[in-house]
Length: 189
Image (cartoon, rainbow, N blue to C red; front, side):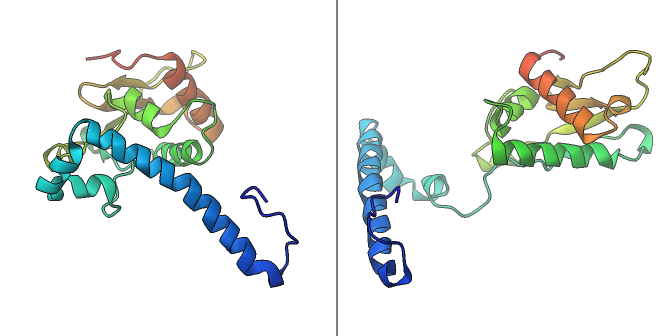
């Protein structure tokens, strides 16, 4: 119906409904692709794309997973075991943000900006190889106070989680959301 089909929805009209959806999609996509082509010509990018196909191909053709992900190198002082609940909470949190975008305006890219100082995963292979987010856990936090927030050092791409204050997913979600939305990216060096 949103594609413009006004007939009766039934199996007998399946072909007609499919044609309507395909036509609608085509009519929406062609102007977008045309606009993209014109935008690329502005900087003579089609010529660059022809001469450097190996560099440009991954930018336009799906293949390797270039999505921001939560895979991280764990830095654990003195051989301590990582609090797996916090790692699971972080993965669940990122998945929830990616799926729903709630709270409004919070994206995985914005979380990356908060943690590392950049919103995207590096594109160049040399940068990808060295791109690691270090996770530390503050086990010695004094719990006499109400809350302790995670701290980030964007320059060294390190996040320190106060494990004493992150016992449940709800606590983790609330504290991390507050830290990201109201904290600053470069608070520690």
